[in-house]
Image 1 (spheres, rainbow, N blue to C red):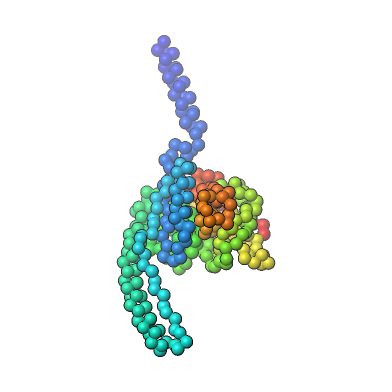
Image 2: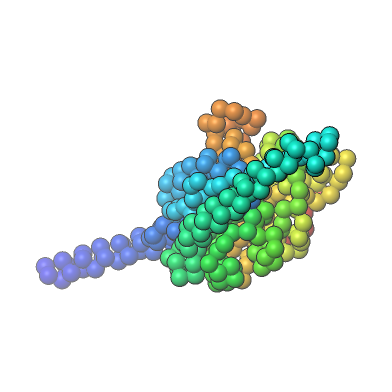
Length: 321
């Protein structure tokens, strides 16, 4: 009888172990931890608050990662506008008076801005090399300008070591003077025209960021023209075969891509200027709600891929134009 009980216990244990082994490798892991940076020292997009809400929603619904935000400190001072000389030139008493007021306002702005930048630096301490050890990846969501990171090269090295970096829209309009960042993300914002309807070509329908998208995906957004981009160093995900604002100019215009970066992974999508790209419930729309839902799946797939939780190749490939 004892032998029978022992046999039943061993058999039950073996079945339980086999069931555990059959689970996906990441199912037993804790959710990955991400920092989402939405700080700007250049142009600030009105869609940032919507993007923050959407990323929180995607994290909660997926259950595969959590997000913590590195956000803009309040009370950013505004730069005063320099007055323009009238018909009588710079000797005009009204212009002289306006210039005196401007100079006083500009002096106060510089003093206030220096104080505010200290608060920005404090918030970005969350990206110190020491604190980054607690996270699996970082998202630059519509960031712009030169962000005063505690250790810029240390941040690049952290991604290279095997971490995830994801960028949306104006992430490529960040750190223009810091070449290691440009090389990591894979491209650099040059310019853009008016917001426009474009048909993005799905360049990798097997990738997690694109598998749900049609072969040609029509969206209305602000489309970036890139520089410092090399097709042979990235895997194309979305692109155009003509200039977004002048269809008579054929060419290779990248919209989204991914790449390996050392042991790490990088995903970038230049879409996401508009609120209605992020949120299906946004009332002021050019894109139908379905486009926002597809965009959410696009960036979710890219995030999960960068975290090594979803399939996709990072090998550069030629694309059809």
